[in-house]
Length: 112
Image 1: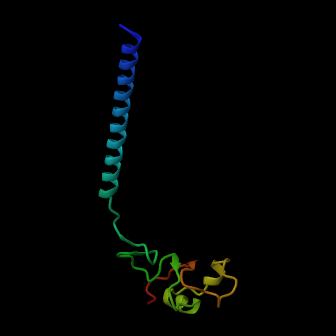
Image 2 (image 1 turned 180 degrees about the vertical axis):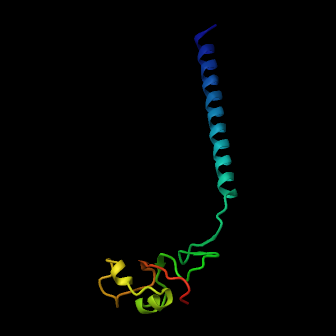
Image 3 (image 1 turned 45 degrees about the horizontal axis):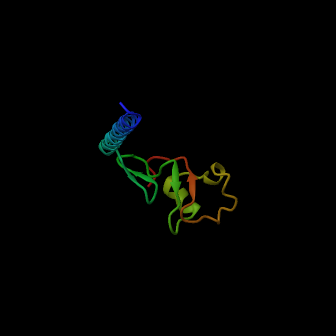
């Protein structure tokens, strides 16, 4: 057996091993993606407003995203939390509230 025959068989063995590794990685990725697709949450998540939609018996969630035209006063009335400014030290001016601002509130049930 010549040295070219040995190097050809070694190259073929390396290529076969690399092919099997690639096939294993592809199979693992397919299995992981199918598990992720089949996993479902018990509630619906709305990515636009960052609020949970489901059978939660609260008018507001603890993490609230300010919407267009809302003020701290309207949010306080809606959620029944008069201490929004105190709980959110990042709000320096209560009049400087803008859509998309994330605030923490203490939701009060049965205040619509």
